[in-house]
Image (cartoon, rainbow, N blue to C red; front, side, top):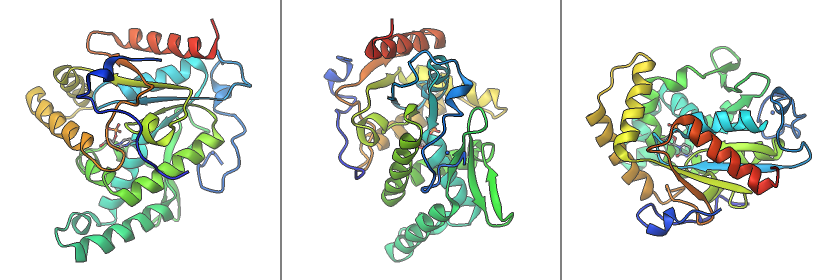
Amino acid sequence: MNAGEPRGHTLSDPSAHAGRPASGANSLTEPKDSGQASARHASVIPQDVDIIVTIDGPAGTGKSTVAQALAERLGLDLLDTGAMYRAAAAIAIDRGLMDDIEADDPATRDPAIARFVEVVTEADVHFDWTTDPPAIMAWSKALGKFEPINERIRTPDVTRAVSIIAGIVPLRHHMVRKQRIIAHQHPRLVTEGRDQGSVVFPDALVKFFLDADLKVRAERRADQLRAAGYPAEGDELMEQLARRDEADRNRDEGPLICPDDAITVDTSDLTFEQVVDRLGRDVLDRVGVA
Ligand code: DC
């Protein structure tokens, strides 16, 4: 399967709200997972049922925390695809590749991007499924071994660089391929990211699109940043989010769209618990578990 055309409609389309319903490593050679991650959580969905649940949507809708809670509640594995793009951004920064990747001159930029994708491929970004939640790992040239990079990928320099990195088409193809391999190894999966239902798993059994007012999303982002010890200003974040939404919706590859067959949930006026309850019920309905 190739990265393929996204299936869905843009957020400005009113029908968007109609709503309907590894070695612990994900290296490309990893055999199908033995199920140790699923064994961590009591399973609500019968063990013999394979199910992919996708959660797409813009930044600040609570996708990550909701996906984590939903996976835990249903006894499914969790794939945080944003972490994979963040890992690639950390690699670009730490290997000193950002300036050339961002160069205006294609004679500098194009070979830098090709080299960057090679470097990311060699770093074999993957998850260690033996930890809970799974740790994201990358090969460290300096240490000569894989190291967890969970903390590195949440730093502000990575957050600033990642939307540029996530727009690099050959990198997206690489990540889409990895994500499909992960789903093959972890066939009972909640996967979260802006293209999961539209591009990566168009045949997923249950697709959600989480949305929320821009102001609410900016406030949530500000709270998260403050909780992590970084200064944050709501108005500034609102402008940043609006710019990012615009860029994400108009991107050629993996744009932010609502899949046609997704269940749209506006989380603006819902608590975290209410969102998780709603999604959990929808999944169980779809699987036929009362
Ligand atoms: O959800 P997050 O903030 O960790 O995502 C990091 C970045 O990666 C953000 O710019 C969105 C982008 N991303 C993407 O383009 N495709 C995905 N499947 C997941 C994230």
